[in-house]
Length: 374
Image (tube, rainbow, N blue to C red; front, side, top):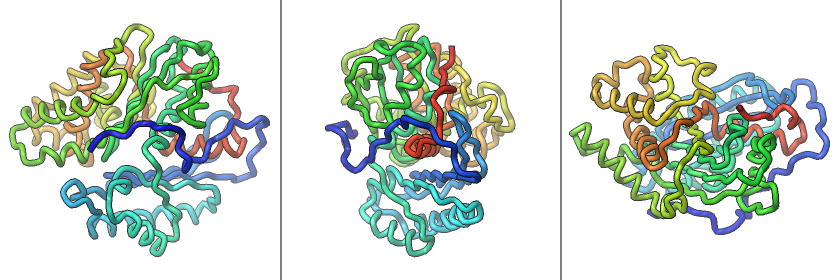
C-alpha cells in the first residue's frame, strides 16, 4: 500500500475560517471531540476560554478496533462490539453534559476496512452518534493545528509527527516567510488547508500519511520472535515508506532553526520514561523538549528490558507495553533521518484539533493569547 499524498484540496473537508469578530460563548457552551482510531476510542468535552479551552470531561479506552484488519481487510465482529460499548459510554457523557456541538471522527482503521460503512450504520443504530470517517489530509491538518502553541518563535522548518495506531502522518512546514511572532497563528490557519501560498503564510513543503502505525507495524512482524531483530525490521520497513516524502528524497537537513513536534502515545511514553515518571503527569510531559540522544537512550533501555521487562515497567504502563516498540521504531527512524536537539513532546492531537477547529469556526476563541515558545 502506498502512502497517501495531497492531490489538491479535499472537497469533503469543510474549511475552517478564522472569525472576524469573537463572540462570547453561551453559558455552559460545551464542545465534544471524539477520535476513533485503530487502537483507541478517546473523547474530550471542553468549554472555550479565551484563546484556549478548559477540559470538562474525558474518556479513553483501548478498543483494538483494527485487530486482525491487516490480515482480513475487515473489522472483526468482536472489535466492533468492543468499540460500540465504548461509544455508548461516550454517548452517556455527551447526554449528561448536554453537549450540542460535537465532531466525532474515525480514522485509519475505518478508512481501510471493507465493512466500515456497515460499522458506521451499526454505531448509528446502537448509539445514535454521528461518527464520520475523515480523510488522511484532514487528520493531518487537525493534528498540526493542535500543536500550534508549541511552535517555537525561532523555528523556520517544522516537522509535525503524529504516530497513530494504523497510520503515521508527517507534515513538513516552512515558516521562514512568517514573522516569528506570527508563526503559531500561521500554523492555526492551516486548518483551512495545506495549499495556501500567499505571502506571510506557513508553507507546507510536503505531507504524507504512511499506512503504518503502532498496531499495524507490530502486526506485520508479529511472527518474528527475536526482539532486537523485530525492532530493526520494523524500523527498516517504516523508512521504506518515506521514499515518497519530499524532505526525505531531497535530503533536507536539520539545523538550529529546525523543530520536530511529536504527538502520540509513543512520544509521551518515551518522554515519561526519560523523566522517570512512575505515574504519568501531563503537566510535566506536554511541551517537554528532548534531544535525539535522549530519545535513543530511552529506546535502548526498552530493548535491554526485553518484552517481560517492558511489561513490568510502570513508566510504560500496561496498556502501552505491547505497542511501544513499534512506535519507538517509527520515532527512532525519524530521529536518525532528521536528528535534532528540539523535539517538542505534545500531549495533544486529533481531539484537540477538532475542538480548536469547531471553536474557531463558531468564533468563540480569541487569537491574542496564542503565542509560541521562545
